[in-house]
Image 1 (spheres, helix red, strand yellow):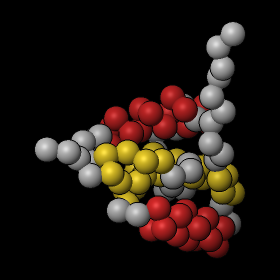
Image 2 (cartoon, rainbow, N blue to C red):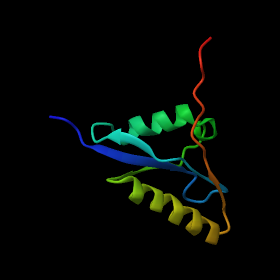
Image 3 (tube, rainbow, N blue to C red):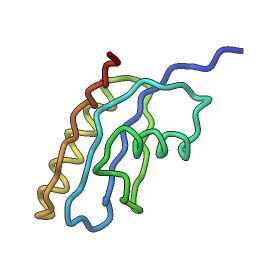
Length: 95
């Protein structure tokens, strides 16, 4: 049975900052676990490597995921925490 496609983003230092990191949305499937996604985010985004307070959010559509990122940025800004919206990692090309 095929797994449904879902979308995800991670948020690091989400409890108290001082800097909150929000990753871009990625496409994944229901078969991938949150611990697997956390490992992926930490591998792809060096700023998250040493973050222990990280959560993964899951969505049925890209629109829901992008709305979540937008709302979280506003909410943490209201709490006077710095928010860093991480960019897509640049793939390393072989020679």
